Image 1: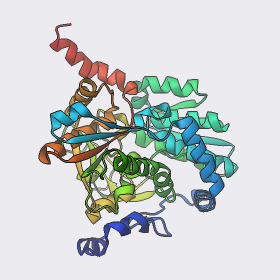
Image 2 (image 1 turned 135 degrees about the horizontal axis):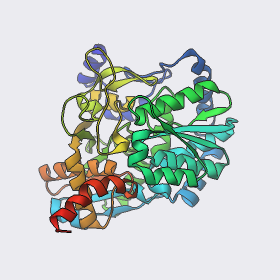
Image 3 (image 1 turned 180 degrees about the vertical axis):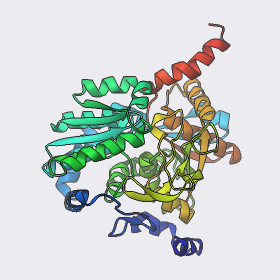
Length: 419
């Protein structure tokens, strides 16, 4: 790690190299990433890596995926000029509208791609984990489309605060299994999905939802989500006749962010900003900002930045957003932070809720609580850089968050309005 920091700080790793150099053959993003799993999973991961190498960039696979993305997912998603926010923030604000994708978030890009891959690899069933429920819904929908049975593990806490998505998964034919051990959120759900996979690594395909976990998942998820950034870059050039001055996205595990960021890594004039969940404070257990407050360690198959105590014990996290409530981050984000190519900040629960309100009232768009963190960070950047162009990744829509919003933001609005 020290040697890598010295190399990165010395400027020998350039932005264009970051865009194409990683991961290496061992699944490493610099010092991060790799594969830290039980021996029973090594053959399954090696088969998956071979399958990714064989299929992912084959013409027939790309044709099938692109057809599904265009005719079923609804790509390309829109690029919206946020006129009122632009006036308020004194900047040119553009929103990449993943909330308009089928099932309501960016998660579907990865889910349908991996479902197609699973079928080609001969899987008989698919298991997945979910936090906010969007990956679970996307996986259930993709499995229904591809014709494979689906089991989704979801923490009991997340099932309570994301009840609408639990119902959607069941309607789409998935079996939803509540996870009642551990912290009962996303981390515990991933643990249970991994246990299921270990029990049948040949017949079961684990459809991981974020750019985390053992190699080749961080690479595979990035490649499937990179469509977001490719589209957004082309749309900015077509609509604004220029690249953005800044690109902003929320970061939990990091799939929507790496998908948006990747197309801009070699554009050194573009500032890239990731916004983590600042929760209610800076102490362990008060937030889910793994890059801002974490230290290197191993979690769920990968070496990255984690929220852990001095003894190396992973800590419970807090965020108003279920999709960001995870104590680690994808290894490529850890590298981008170490290289200085991407700057990572956090937004508090309160800032995210205020961003939901402002986006709703200004643009008629209800953003997901995850996306609201990006909006909060974008507003700060715009106020410090007036008159500039800023592209914000709107990773999903906020329908799923209505139980949380009803108990927080809407209750506050009713009180203010005397209702």
